[in-house]
Length: 216
Image (cartoon, rainbow, N blue to C red; front, top):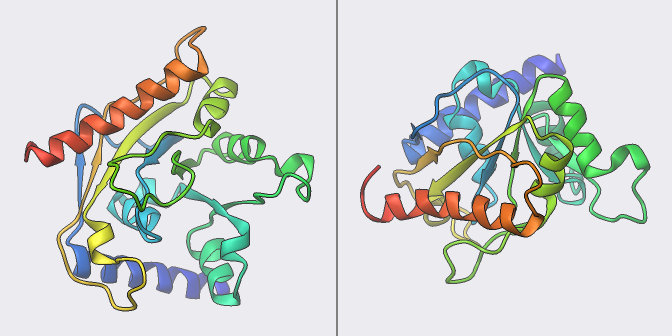
């Protein structure tokens, strides 16, 4: 019964998101493939991962899980149900003092990939509420790929969702949104953390620039 209700909620959310945003998934020099990947994206709204999730083909969406903060999603029964049953999120304890060894973020993400699932992450680490197009990346993406160098990281640029759901508003504003997926990024042999993060950041910025210039 719970699984059936979660599926109904999932379908309803997809219909709602598409009605509000007419979201388009655009793939540039990369194809949607049913294999474990990391989709790493810019972060300006609480609805970011839902938009990415909705824009993926059905067979891929069903195997793709957002990586999210447990403390946020455990604040109410409704949020917890959505995170655990609808989105099947990988829920991370952000407090190193309280989490168990098996709850380490890289370990949990690796376990999901080993089960054939893909992940959605936001390497900025928090919502970007500045004038900057994209904040500096935290180190999590590098550490994960260092442990899993065969995995492809797909830069994913979200356009317009922050205008659909501005911070502090209760009702969304219908606007067309796009989710642009770019060519895969992998960790090169002996590549330093600093160099890799700079390169991954640059690949995401390329997609943003293409949006600004109307090339997608």
